[in-house]
Amino acid sequence: MSFSERQKQFKAGIADRAEIKPDARIAENFGFSNSARVIERGLFACTNNLQSYSAKIAADPTQGVPQFVFLCVLTFPPNDEVYFAIVVNDASTVNGGLIKLLREVEEKNAQLAAAGRKTGSINNNVKFYVTQGGKLFFHNEDFMESLTVGELDPA
Image (cartoon, rainbow, N blue to C red; front, side, top):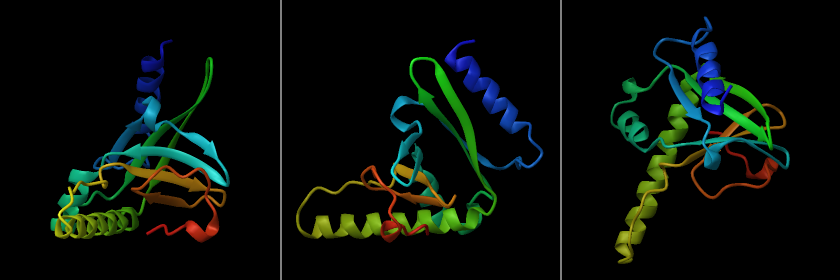
């Protein structure tokens, strides 16, 4: 079975589960640049492009999805893979955090514009991590090599 066939089989298996809501946002994270990695004190789970979604819920919070499902793969070359899904049943925390990230980006861009510098958005690449204690953490800055308690701000 090919890599893409395994991905499709995994996605179908998750979508068929009773606890997955029909209006959940299901995000596939099987690409090389956003696949899972073990890091110090946790797991880098995935990166998602959430720029347009963040702008949509910032404009109208009722447009937020009720559930997020992140489909992930942890690869052990040459031939081993571990597929897993992160299911966030209370999407309000993630939605609130995404709006917070969007506002931070808007503020940084305004400061850059005021200083006459080029602006750009970094909110489109939201990185998700799972801590040793099983908590979900996300941000939109550089990739973290370690999850130390003092650095975490989950929402």
